[in-house]
Every structure is written in structure tokens, then in C-alpha cells.
Amino acid sequence: MKSALIKLHITVFLWGFTGVLGRAIHLNEGWLVWWRMLITSVSMWALVLLFGKFEKISLKQFLQIGGIGVILALHWLCFYGSIKYSNVSIALTCLSSSAFLSAIIEPVVFRKRINFKELLFGMLAIVGILIVYYGNIHFSGGIVIGLIAAFLAATVSVLNKKIVAGYRSHTFALYQLTGGLAGLSLLMPLYNHLFPAVNIYPGKTDWLWLVMLAWFCTILTYILYTQSLKFLSAFTSNITLTLEPVYGIILAFVVYKENKDLSEYFYIGFICILLAVVLQTFAFTRSSKDKTIQYYE
Image (cartoon, rainbow, N blue to C red):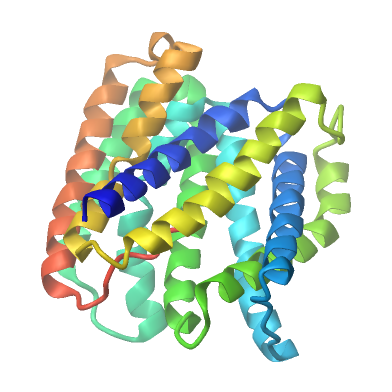
């Protein structure tokens, strides 16, 4: 139990670290995500083939899983775009609202009643976002992009939950990342035309940060996360996941001194959002039979 909890906290800390790494990479958000997905996909294919874990799936299954991978790629694109247009703290604050967006999207996908208690928690989160927006209007572009990233993250979570049963976790992740890379590769010429990049190739230090994103913040966290779920309760797992934006914001304060760029309204709004997340986690854990919420950062 103790070992599993440590693994989960390492996972959440590394997820929080992705924002700090994203700001350090001297590429625009499109090429940053493309290189991250390329390195991650190639590495995962190498590991799967090396350890004999490769499993074939049908074209229909690949298109289904890979399609969600494209949404995941767009989520990452918007998340890092939010960082580029504002900062890490703003992007993570917006991303923390994804749990409540899931509460709205999930009933539509699974055709079940909306949980009005979760909607109330969502209203508290919305109040928090409005406070953050009001007090940091100079970051309005980053906030809007961050909320789109949160919506896409919630969509990925709900769709994953719908089809993940029946697949081994490494197989699902492999084809999802591969599909996401393929879809993003098709979109990049248009994206690069609309948002021309000064550089499309990583610099020397960028390679280091990209490898860390791929190997430590994606592949390693996937391994640690799936291992920890075998021994932890849903409540423990879900409440620990709420620390992801906290870890990330603390790191951003330490590394980039972002606290100097934020008004006091940011802290009030963030506390509202974090409180809503904690309350929603309590309600979810009591009412749901699922082991944990789906998360993939």
C-alpha cells in the first residue's frame, strides 16, 4: 500500500512537471506536441516489440482508439498553447475544471441522468474560473485556450471509459498514441500555415526536455499509475489526482517565479476550483463503482 501510494504521488508530480517542461521548450505548441508524440510512440513500439507484448487489433478498432488519440493530441496542443499564451499556473488551473466537464459530457455519451450535485460543484468551479479570469484579464487568451484543453481532456476521459474494457492497458495506450501521432501529422501542414513556426526542429536542450516528457512524464507515469491502481482505493487515487495542478503550480512558482505575474484573484479562484474538485471526488467515490477516474496527461 505504501509503495503504491508513493508511485501514485510520483506520477502526479511528473504530470504537474509537464507544464514546466512545456514552457522550457523553444517550439510552438504544435511542434512541441508532435515531437512529444513521435518520441513517445516510437519508444512504446520499441518496448512492446522488445518484451513481446505486441497485440494486433482490427482496422475498425484502430480507427476508434486512434480517433480518441487525435483528440488527446488536440488536448495537449491546447494545453501547451495555453501555457505559451499565459503561463503554467493559468493552464493548470483551467485544466483542473475537466472533472466537472466530464460530469456534463458523460451523461450525454452514456445516456444517463445528469448528477445535479456534480453540477453544483461545477458551478463552484466556474465561479473560480471567472474570478481567475477577472483578476488576470491580460491572460484571457491563455485562459480560453486552457478551458478548451480542459473540455478535450474531459472528452478523452469519457470516450476512453466507454471503449477501454477488453483491451490491455499497454495495447490501448500504444494504438491511441500512434493514432494521435498520425492524425496530428495530417493536421500539421495546415496548423503550420495558420501559425507559422520559427523553428520546427528541437534545439539541444529541447531534446532533453522532450525526452523527459516522453519517457518520464508519459511512459513512466503510465507504468507507475497502472501499478498503483492495483493496490489503492478509488478515494485515495482520486483525491491524490487533485494534487496535480497543485504540484505543477508550486513548480512554476519555484522555477519561473510565476507568482509575481498573478493577482490575488488567482489564489481565490484556484481555491474555489480546488475545493470543488475535492468535493466532487468525495461524491464520485461514494456513488461510483468504478475503480478510479480516467486520466491521461
